[in-house]
Image (cartoon, rainbow, N blue to C red; front, side, top):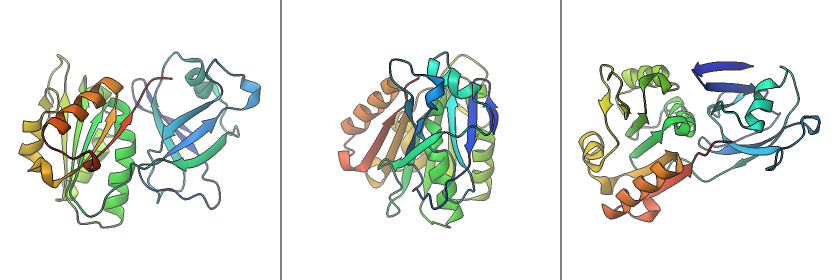
Length: 227
């Protein structure tokens, strides 16, 4: 099944293989059928899972693009068998410390999985999500995350826009900064950071956190590139 989350962002649902287990925040490899053919990067790509480990299906959520792989994935008939391998990745929740998630655009996907899993398991740690998009209409899952924050006092959502559009009520304008993080999450030294998004954004936030004294062991990063 496919469903459109925002204009240009699609969630793909896959039947979960029997016995397949994963930790929230991990990724899988998807390999297109041999009949599809391959581009110069082959038929396999990595995708973070946007579903919770408690869900019946496995889901990935991705920006639609003009790449050969994305076009082929979008065009697959419903019911097509596709090869899945994994899970992979070490960006999983440290349950011992408060968590700060910083997502740029489609980088929200592993965090959606992690937050839903933490809430479904009744974890008590504090979680703050800074969700940065160019315009509010680009923010996949924002309604769901707002509802989770409304009903879970230990979870806060801080959506921001970096473009020139109108700022919706409850949103902020501008890039995520140390001051913004401190205002909502407290002392940077007391948190574990999870950063996912475009490579330039991820690298900038990494350098900002390092310059602020955050230890390398206290943040996890994942770069999202288009393919």
